[in-house]
Amino acid sequence: MKVFQRETRPLKQQKAPSRPFVVDLDGTLLRSDLLFECVMAFVRRQPWRWIQPLVWLCRGKAFLKEQLAKATVIDVTLLPYDPDVLAMIEAQRKEGRKIVLATASHHSLALRVAEHLKVFDDVLATSLECNLSGTHKRDLLVTLYGERGFDYVGNAFEDLSIWRAAERAYVVNPMPGVEHATKRLINVEQVVCTGATNFRDWYKAFRIHQWAKNTLIFVPLLAAHQFGNPFLLWHGVLAFVFFGLCASGVYVLNDLLDLEDDRRHPRKRNRPFASGRLSIKSGLMAFPCLLLGAFLGAWWCLPWPFVTVLATYYVLTLVYSLALKRVMALDVIALALLYTLRIIAGGAAFELELTVWMLAFSMFMFLSLALVKRYAELQAALCCGVTGKTGGRDYYPSDLAMLSSLGAASGYLAVMVLALYIHDSTTVALYSHPQLIWLACPLLLFWITRVWMLTHRGKMNDDPVVFALRDRLSLVMGAMFGLIFWLAA
Image 1: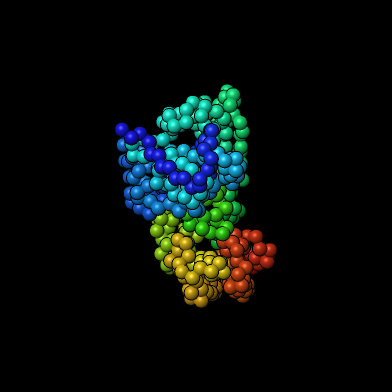
Image 2: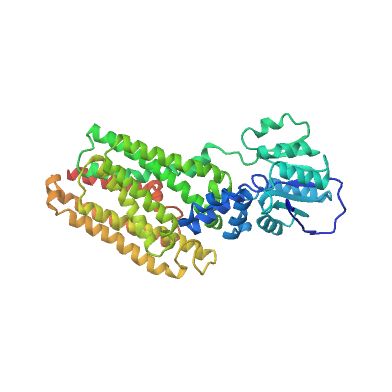
């Protein structure tokens, strides 16, 4: 019976080496794991079949890898390879040694990686008959090259038995506890740690800076002039934290589903999961914990309508990540609604009634900002020479003029809603001098116009909300906007 998949690919006529240099793929040469890459690609393309990989797993890892390899298309040219391992391989090649790729990944994927890198003389990988990891890989290498007849580069606990059978052991980016375990080995030649995870990577993955958007939760409290109420203020702080945890869980899941698109993007390819600084496995463990903390905390501490709004927000973000973000117009409308849901969540947390003016203003304003974001992405793609659809979006660079028209019109409609709000009977009752709010209208018109002009000039390099929080003039205008409403009150 065939127990392994072996493909010999002589790339060059070389002198037969006395001891092959064998390199593992997942977590070693590759700062990722092709099994999890395939799972995320499968779920993204067929989200309604998300349970299918678990069904395949019941028939063994080899069967799972076989089915995933058939059901997905992974662009191996975009994968995050470790440059230090590639340099190590190149140094061994210059010495005339035979370079072997030995991996537990499916043989079809391993062959494509080898074809792309063009540094391997032989490829050993998983087939339907055998999952080539741990003792299976060790037994195969010993059969082919003999005990102590090869050097091995790996990173996991499964590699310990292989290192014991090798002449020299190379440990690259070891998993937690592996480096300590290798201290018992006497043949460790080198330990290389190039991709150590740190707090900053998780900070970026959780998008903590994006939590600033959750300050919209406090808008109903400010509008009702109840910001001095300590009980409601405490509810607002809790709602802010729980909404932030939920949003971070969504960001992590979104990054896992968008790995390929992010790697094609000039800036997003540096995100922790896309670059391989954080593993897909750690992300799959992190996002459910974040969501569980958010919903349990909200259910325990806040009114049930807030939990309902939070669940609505999560479902909409999930649908957005899986489908809506790739549908023209629906994507920006969904983004505007996600911002507005933060205000609705605030009303639910404080148990305050929201006005139609507040909701209308929010939808038009954030629709404008969502269109700013799309415009900036398309403009960047056009500068890179892209003329077709941009990655993961349903827009063409030729749509720029239409997007700017729609975005500016939406922003100006938000100003009109603000002007109409001034004469509402509720406004007259809340403010001593409601006519002063008119001063906020030209201020807002200037800010919207400025944002769109900067975007048109190619200077909007970030999320427009994040831009507003970092832009000094925007902060000054925001303070003036708040001062106007304070004086009117």
